[in-house]
Image 1 (cartoon, rainbow, N blue to C red):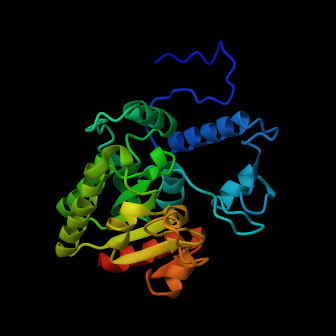
Image 2 (image 1 turned 45 degrees about the vertical axis):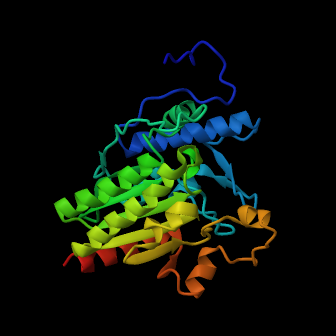
Length: 301
């Protein structure tokens, strides 16, 4: 696909780009997407200089925001991260190697415009699917890591995500590695119907085999984590960490309200789930990496 950006004005549309070859390129792609979003919204504030907090609307200097791990220093709101930004703040520099980055696009039900939508998501995110998996080190400790991104069709789980998570755990068994997965999803991918629901059993089986092999699995729940991901591998970790302010549950509030019921306020929050024993740790973003370091160091002795 040709890129005519040098000859035509670019009114908030993203240029088709090749998949990034590393975390730094992925972070740069994320910044470009953010600039395009703000230009498309006719915002007068350059995204590479200032960002508005989604909760308190405070204008934040972009470099200070990045230094604070994309957390608002006024109200503590956690900005949503791309997988590339998450890798940047979690694993050692230049340690990440992608696994299965060339996963093919599939359209088992010939769903209208599904392949086109998936291809656009690939160009936008630099990912082959809504999950990115690979091997990395954290303070020198080797691990298998998976990350999910809401920007890829809402982080929904279809065959591709289920296959990537399953292969991640199977490779971890073969290479005797602990597994860390950062979950973020809107649920099962409706364009794949029952095939997407089957991934719940498939990934759960892989998590069971990982546990049988005596290898630790740490699940980190980020905002938001819903649907089939919640009902499968997200809540099957030996340790379950939730990032502060994350929403989580099976059916979202709007889906529940269609049934005529109303969700009690605050039920689907990380804070509520922690208070009621559904997760093991509730942490602000800055404390997640140190916690992972401690867990991995002791688990892999």
